Each structure stands twice: as C-alpha cells, then as structure tokens.
Image (cartoon, rainbow, N blue to C red):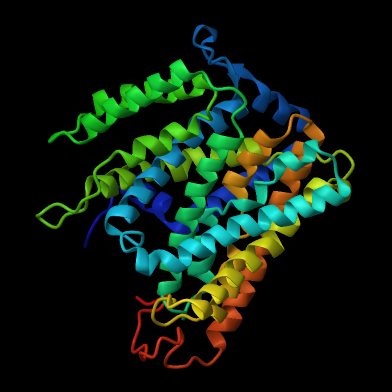
Length: 413
C-alpha cells in the first residue's frame, strides 16, 4: 500500500486540470457574490489596498499585484509549456500543428472583428480599445470542460485544443506587449532583456541553482514592470529560455520539470487570487444594464459567435482548400464543441479588460460580459461535446483516405 503525504496529494490536486478549473470558478463566484453583497465595500477596500515599497515604484494595489505579479507566475508556466511544445511537442512539426495553429489565428481575428463591428455601430471610440478582450482562450477552463464532457471522443481533440490554446496565448501575449503598452522606457526594457539573458545562461547550466534564478527572474520582472510593458511578458520570456530538449536518458526536459514544479503555485495560488481580485464586478444597477452596453455586447458576441466561426470556419476552409488535414480520428464536426470551449475567455480576457479601459463602468461591463460569456461557452461546449460523443463515427473522420483504426479516447483508463 502506497502512502502519500498531504503535500503530494495537494500537488496532485493543484495540477489536475478539472480541479484547477473548479478552483478558478469558485474564486470568481466568491468575488462576484461578495462584491455585490451588503458588505461589498469590504471587498473593494481589500482589493484596492496599497502595499509594497514606494522606493521601487511597487506601492501597488492588491488587485494590481495579482494582475502584474501573481499572473506572471502563470505566464511563466505558459512560457515553459510553449517552449516544450515548440521543441518536442505539438508545435515541433509544423505540418501536424498547421491546422490548429491556423484555427487559433481565426479564433483571434474573427472575435476581434465581431467586437469591433458591434462597438463601431453602437459605441464610442474609446470603447474600441477593448477589441482584444474576446480574442483570448483560458487553457485551464477549456481543457477541464473537455476532459469531463468529452469522454468517449478521440484524445486527439485534447492535443488540438492545447495546440490552439498555446498559439492563442502567444498571440495574446504579443497583443498585450504591442497594443496595451502606453509608453516604453527603452533603457529599462533593455535592462529587462539583459536580465532575461542572464537567466537563460543560468537555466542552461549543468546544475541550475534556484537561489540564483529566482533573484534574476525577479529583477527581470521588475525592470519589465518599470519599462511600461506589462510585467507578465517577463514571465513568458523567462519560460522560453529554459531548455526543452529531451535528455539522452529519456527523462523529462528541464522545461517540463520546471513547469510541473511551478504549476501548483500557479494553479493553487496565482490564478485563484487573480480570479478573486478581477471577478468582483460591482453591479449597482443589476446585471442587465452592464450586459446591454456596447462593450458587453461586443465581448459576448466575440466569445460566443466569433470564436466558433473563427475556429470552425478556418478549419473547414483549410482542410477543404489545402492538403492539410486534421489528426487521425477527428473531423470538422468535432470542432463545434471545441470552438465553443475557446469562448471561455476568463483569465487573459479579464486581464485585457483591465488594460483596455480607464472608465470603471466600461471595465465592469467588460468583466461581467467575460464571466457570463465564459459560463455560457462552457455549458454550450459541454452539451455539444456530449451530443457529438453519442453520434456514429466513420472510419475516416479526417477524410485523408487512411482508415483511422483504434484510437485512444478521452476518459480511457
């Protein structure tokens, strides 16, 4: 009989995709309920409380610390996962990754166009700044719903969704760095790049010493924060410097090991705290008024309609007009559920909502829309996946002329 320690059980729980998604949802629900309760002022006092050394320009509110500081931990994991996928994973062979990569581009561009079209006809010029809000996909939530609702469907769907979400994250990170940075201090930005370079050297050493890596990483984060570029970009850059080649002995690469090491901190602390500080939307006039604003309508339309059209439409066009095909065992029809799941914006969408506007009403409207659209996308995506799992399947779902044969399924032991 194997006895596991409480720490091991906690680590296993925080790395479980379904559990981490539920923890995120719970934190968001608690924040939303508290913010709109009779003691909602206490929530706003807590999240707006300023802490940190002013000498380093780090006297920030709790909510800013969560968005700029803790979320950098999440983006560090994203960077490590992207590096693994680029070197040894789903992005290592462009031919296999081409369809989900192109689907990701469609899933970013079309929602942005939907938002822009809605706001341009009904809103103001300042509200157009939120065009990127519906472009982001929340990996943790989307994969969690897929693994629960997609039982019986080919496991290749998970790889497709992960590949799509990774590329989506890369685009979102680029968008944040390019379009949501007001002024850039080039000297500090160069300093951040130098710190990242030092981190890269230390990360490639035969023996990686955490007591050197952590301070250098913090310096890189601080300099990025001071440069005007959103500090979470530092987390991604640091993750991308870590070696991801598989060692000769067949063990996991350093990028994979570090991702597994940091993930409990990301899933168990960073993401729930950010969700708690970001999801407390104060709905003084109820839910209906914020959700009828142009910003909210654009976000909901982008996440629920734009994502599905972008992902499904791009995939259908690519597989019909080019030699590219989906992986064995899955067809375009399977991607209705996946496309809906990509409408679960949440983490990055909430971050972009905060960066898009200075008007609190616009921020609250955008956040309320992200929360409502994400819940609807999760429910509709789960229903679509369950219905698809019950449908008869052909022996050549991707129509490449090669019979699919027996394939691993979601939920197999």
